[in-house]
Amino acid sequence: MTSSTCPVCKSLLLLPTPEPHTRERAVDCPRCGAYHATFEALSSLDELSNKHRTYRCVTSHAIRRRHNPDNPPFLVTTSWLASVWANENLPTPQEQADRFIEFLGAANRIPSEWVPCYPQRLGGILGTADDPTSQDIRGLT
Ligand SMILES: [Zn+2]
Image (cartoon, rainbow, N blue to C red):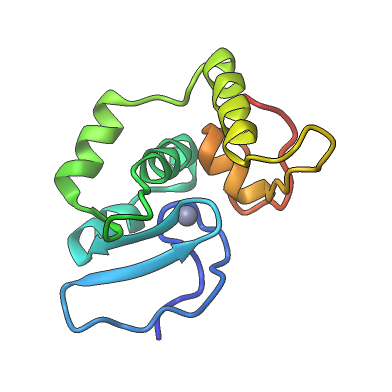
């Protein structure tokens, strides 16, 4: 078994992760979703200091956007991380609002029903810059 926190956003994982027989680690994070990461990518993530918290949020959001239940979990590599860190930012408040509306619509509930919103998952979907280890979201930016 490996550590119980997400290497990207540092959220507590839902389940312990068994060590695979490859040079990859399978992660099931409440914020990022299920993904795999190469050992080299994990090393790059370990090198991020606390001052790079925004990088963690951007990376978490980028992983969450690649989630597709019909495909195997997304594989995080060092080249993909470098591309994300060089080219991607957190969404604007308007983009976050649009994604929130899409999220609510995708829940396919009748208008009077509540849509369950798990804060960490919502943070990954919307791309918020909140503390990924926090249990609550204080805003959309
Ligand atoms: Zn995560």
